[in-house]
Image: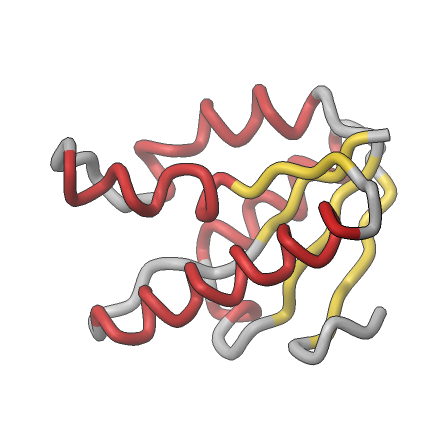
Length: 112
């Protein structure tokens, strides 16, 4: 079983972006500690954006996320502040539905 994790990322405030990345990292860590296999593009790629000057836009990451999500057994949406306004989150939820993935919404405190 492999869980693909969706969460908001882009924001005009760099501190918000960094906090969102940290919260995605923490959630990935919690699932990993429980013995679950999971993937978050934000946790996996956030550090590379500055090192390699990669774009942080949904348009750039869409194909990457689609390929990774297609292999997942289920999808978790990490409902951080701004998730409902996030273009990427909304698009990934639609992709999950197209792929017939079970979608679980996870509140900020980690509860489903």
